[in-house]
Image (tube, rainbow, N blue to C red; front, side, top):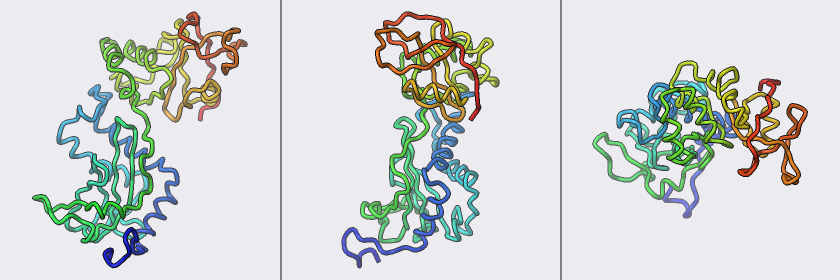
Length: 313
């Protein structure tokens, strides 16, 4: 029993340790859990068809469904077996999956009391997520229950959570990072192409995911709106703005210039200018046989160089 131990000491729990070892072996850096959470938020918001990008824009029933979707998406990501009583069987151990918008305040049903809980939290606005394991034993739970007989971890119980990842970064939703004034301008146009152009014009230096492009374009062929030959790359080139994608040479150039490296499905825009004396030791890349740097606000606007697409990741 937890009360038989010295303060701050938790009894060994071989089942919990086995589940923890299994999860960490399958996802050492948390990329897969984060991907399942990101996928869940994007599914709920359905930006391509609704234009929504904030948690507050969801209906109450959609918010309630979030935990179930995270449970489903984690099972799809990891291939967990179904549990006989609880959500999963991980390494032969029954595990219940719970999500809450408040860290550690998971609603624990009667059938999960005494069992292992995989608890998750995420906040899209903060761009952070956490995942931890805890045995929901009786002495770790608050005595009161809601009308569904669900209970929560007590203050002492929350101290026994074994965090796999805490406050880890969630793939950025750039629409939550730029000023409301810019959001207003982006969504003002009735043209999907013009909205995408404005997105890359106003969100320079930020990773922009496919989902964000789809939310802004609200069209089926949304990635066409990013490319050259009439897309944002062509439209913004006269303004000196280039759009780096996930091609190997694009990623390398972005990193050299001190920009975020575009990940799978991501793009990063920035205004470039030819390198001049006043740029000093500012990092540069060679494109079209010339040296280019990230433009300062007082640098002249000039036609951006063409970006060859070499070596897709």
